[in-house]
Image 1 (tube, one colour):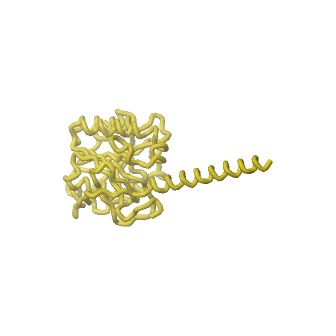
Image 2 (tube, rainbow, N blue to C red):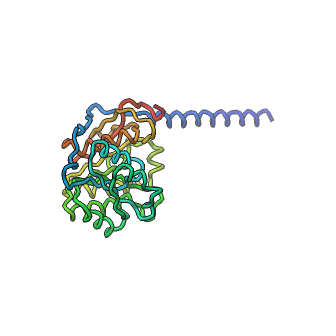
Image 3 (cartoon, rainbow, N blue to C red):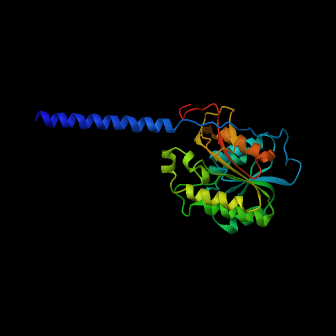
Length: 268
């Protein structure tokens, strides 16, 4: 009997040690890895579209990062159009966009005709795509972005900013293992979308944010071409970086990682 209890004790001790190691590895994997080379895009001081018939098209702008992009653009007086899915185009779901002075066109990014019609409805200086979905059928991460890229080419909208994720493309090993696991289904689709845009001939920017946070805006944030750069960033700070890339030619034809240098851990 003593041997049995001794065996149980050793087994429990081994499991505890293993659990501690797993937790430690998890925490360490969530530590930021800031790059040596980084930059902050320069935001234009004055509106580019206010005195023209041009507008910025934001697809995926009803909430999240897309909404933060819209807020930054509208704060300096830019004309903005948001493409909203038919099911979401209700006063209850888009009233905040109307209050911001955003024009709304109805359309689903996974339907070619919808995107073509949306771009035909105005004159657009650039398109920002923040679409992506875990559970959508069909998933929009590749299909929607491919359709947007094709429609931009057809409509002559030469500037496209696509928001992807650290873990896509050549940054797979940069993402923490928990992110790679959680995003296992969508990272290959985001990789396809990145590759398709990069080969389109458009003036593109692909932005790969790290871990996203809400309600903790710091005013910080950086972009880097270093594929090993990783960190965390609030969506409001990311929105400002995205708009900066619309203004700053250093972002053109680049795939850039986005994070906040003031956040060294997910808990910051």
